Image 1 (spheres, rainbow over the protein chains, first blue to last red):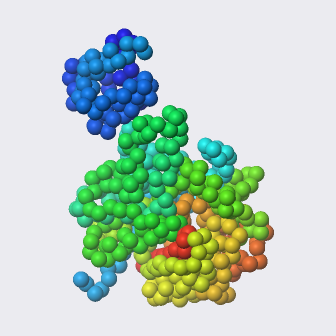
Image 2: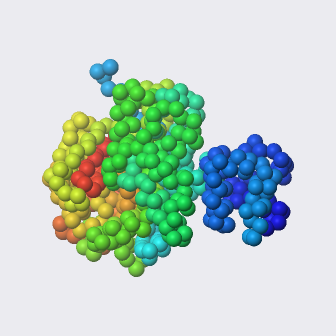
Image 3: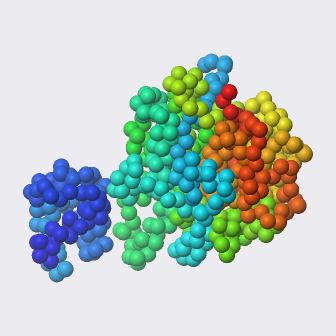
Length: 83
Length: 412
């Protein structure tokens, strides 16, 4: 999966959680939680969706890697290389 | 504590019924006997008549919150906000720590658990796919708690489990908490999300107690010879309860004053009702209201359309009211189905406008009255105009032998 496709995947999952989420001004290097209406339960939803869609088991200690859109892409790129 | 109990009144009603999302429309449809029961197709179970509510689910909170919470919570948030609007109350009128939220439920968590088991069935029952939302959704206080989060209420919130008497029981709880001085205002009522559970339909069917008809609107037929069971409905109704003096002070419109109430237990059977305890419950509520059977203008029956349940309640009414000439008897479930934990409060709400229009809304679908259900002044098919309606008695009974009765009177 390309970096752009991973980015789209994350945004699509966030949009499923909150269809009012506004990505217009989203800065990829800033924490998602600071910019969107997301909390810790929403992050668990993202983790669950990645598990459901791509059979990814993300260990709890890696959750901080999902903090920003850039860090999501960096973290997921090697895991989704064959996706 | 004051020995003089405060007088407590209903000043706001928020509701979602299978045929209306506000009291005005609901009343019009009840008076005209308009049922909107429809056919529902349930996972595993198949098709069944059911009462489904259409209301503006995102009027008071975002779709995101509805997704995270429960259907019951969504009902609660809508009805609590509607009740406040109806009461003309800002949430800041009373201190938020002095507002209590009391919600009656027949069951909770059934829908969410069934959904989650189905979800993991898509993943070979691997519990790694079980949602982290399960526990906050299924804790029993969930629907009441969702109301407090939405409105920023910091007073007590909890749920009363009392089977299908739960709506009445929570209304009573709200009255008692104001009486005790625990809160100044209560949001009290009942909620049902039961149409989301195939298990509830399947269980009634296994019991031989699920109503049926070619036209779903005719599936709930209390007192009719051909009745064959319950129509499961979702729905909710939340009341604003205040002390009379507080309501008068702020110039509120008063729907009704709580006159008396009672709850008792059959101590007898898991599912079968028992007329003697039902009769005692009605008598106790009237005694507390300092009223006699002749003083009751409208009696809203609990009757759900089951063979024995309807007969049992009619026996109880006959025992208490005899050939009473003053009491008019109706049934709301015939029109909206059985809204379970919301039934008591939703049915009472449908009758409250009688204090203004002096009409008794009818029961429908009773073409061939069962002689064992025959009572004086049954209001069938068409509304009855009375000179004056001053009191309403509302029956609401439930499984495992719980009976509840609330009597309200017109504020004069």
